[in-house]
Length: 478
Ligand code: SF4
Image 1 (cartoon, rainbow, N blue to C red):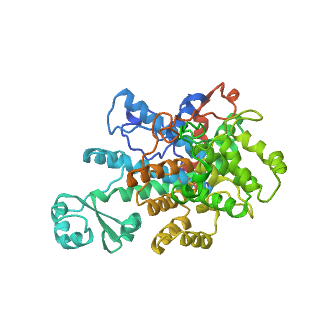
Image 2: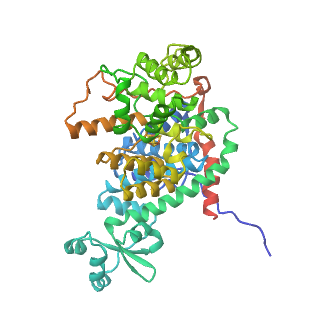
Image 3: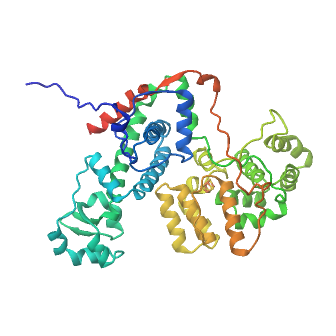
């Protein structure tokens, strides 16, 4: 008897561009094999992190094919950078799913058909007789659709486990373990497939990571990538009017994200913050427009309630000037992004960090209750937190407190800017949004990876592929 275990090995992607990238929507089943320079490696990763990946349907021009190739490579680069912890995996999964859904919704009916065909997803609509027989059930279960739409849309019969979100929302007809869904909801099936594949691939990639990290150039880049904030730069305070310390109490209630509101309340109540809190809050204040002189005054007034002036000047004032680039290396330090705060470590007795990540749920709920949030909203936030969706919970908090749905929140200072704009819209309060205002669109931050000296050589993406293929193969052997 032959006991040899035969491994079913999947090959990496190879072939002509037109064959490989005929469609804008990709499932990223196979890793790329090609050489790119290290500069491109970095550029592709940044492009994807900034959300600048293009989508163009099913066009076949050289430009469109090249864009899809970039999309393919950048997806796999981020897999490597975001596979190392549960938190990072969850973050990437959410971002990639959003992108996938966005692109799917932009497809024409023909685009959807080509995508299904190209990926050998043989889902056939149910026959007309079956649809006619189930017509009433389909109508009642898909209450968002009119009877005309029921006639127009194709319906598919899929295992109910593939569309749990629709089942949970009672948006489909169930029979004998199958769900009947209209073509407009077909994205649920694909999202579920996409999520499962990527989720497993990320875990598998994490196992291959130690081998990859033997390459110091890659190690440095991958290690730093998830901490690289790619949004607006809040380190430059150009706010002509500025924010005065006297305004902070009111602003903290109206416009600060919870992480900063709790730091502000802590310093007002205890007249002290530990180092982590001073850094997180101090840089945030700089970003919203508190000048160095006002920052020194604010911290001095609080700290000297518990210590003498001399001690404050010797132990704390230097650090505040340092954050404003007036001491030491004279670096103009950047306010912390959500990712940096969420991924940072928080010890017992610390007050910094993200409350949606670092605060115990009962304590967080009590805090929201103290802020007079309605019980149902507190529960909605708590549900998001218990599923690990810190930034989405923060968005919910914004929505509840402003009655406006915000853009994705990636930075406490961006939260503040959005809040001020929302309040300006509601109360007729005119913000200074001119060119010199820190609340106008700030210049995009120049991304700098660790040490540019290590980026001299080209890098062969196929080296990544060895690990990625292993990950893929581990997946297929599941
Ligand atoms: Fe602060 Fe960001 Fe957490 Fe919101 S998600 S509380 S802005 S760290």
